[in-house]
Image (cartoon, rainbow, N blue to C red):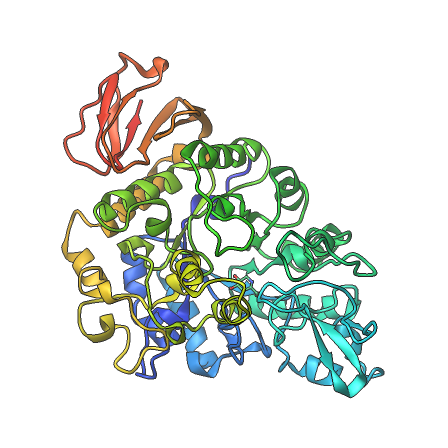
Length: 556
Ligand code: NOJ
């Protein structure tokens, strides 16, 4: 197993729209990020993944790019970006950008041309098809509701959009498209950026002929998954990208890959595959949903442990895990996997302990380090995410779901839970902006904010800071072999990490109640010392009385 900076690093995911507004227009921007670089330095993270900052009409908040080589006006200028990059590098922080190339914006000049005529040189940059008896070319539904095809009058054809109709899919079968993407990647690498997080990268190769997808019970459209996830040419495309671009730079890559198993993952991130370094798998993100994300499914801890452990074990010798429990598309982790009320602080620290003591690279999503929580807006109009708004139209207005059931789903799973602005202090709008925030601030900013966190030595922030600094001095946290104990235990997740004669035993109580726990036989009657824990006064005993959400890491 090779040692590298991106295995040893910690990534901070920064969603710029909601991070810090410097000019009072209610939208976070690059100068806002520059103002807060010392905050990131204080936390100790070594890599920042910046969500898209490119020119975009913002139908999907920057994931619909109209110019890959320019900065979105609302976020600032290229000069601001250059200053940001320099400011990060001066502080020893690497910058990873978002690469969104399954689709572009319909306002990208390629698409504007593509639409004009069937013989336009850019026609084949996108995926066009003829209708069948007044219906789209196939039955696929889009991720953001409705058909995945949009009719265009000019040429009497439909174009494919797996996401919104303002996000037409690029045609990766076309060599020219691939070359454009590679050139654009080089443009950013030559500026000095340190890597890419690749948006739905395993969607780029589609099965030729685009066959109809399976229609699941209750679904309005066919599922495109089978015919566009991990498609027939995906590995060829990624190996080509690696050869043409990635292999020429010392950069980090992490692919967003829904619908990937550990076996498939090894083909994407295996050390000798020459594709990507890491990927985001989604198995644990599906644990509490049944079909559409708005439907809740009850889950038990062993199911969660089985998934987490499986990925640890399967990528032990080949490949590398990305460790995350939330991001800009997922609800806040403390609300989902912990207790965001009575035990908010304890459970946030417990979950952090897990993320930072597993094998892989931990990702901290902005606000996680102060234990930010989900939000509940009563009025649907206070939500800005098109996924929520489109689903509301289709399901609630369409009479398929009762409004209260849908809103319960939004409160639990909606993407805007993660996108509310960072709560910097207890001044108006949590100190995020002097104007009107583009998305309302979570009303709990009075209590949960960065200022409070920095003033309290026992805060979640300082716990993260400690975990991050321990990782820098303890290779066992990075490279140690992972072994689980008591996999059927309904309340406790327990595992060890071993590396060059050092062992960490990790004991995590996932419940908001006291739990008695016998430590694994091999650690009984041995002398260990507390490495980190989220409660004070921990006594190491063979039978531990764990407090609610207690996390204990013992070093032997
Ligand atoms: C995944 C991104 O994380 C999400 O925010 C976006 O809506 C889709 N891909 C489409 O780009």
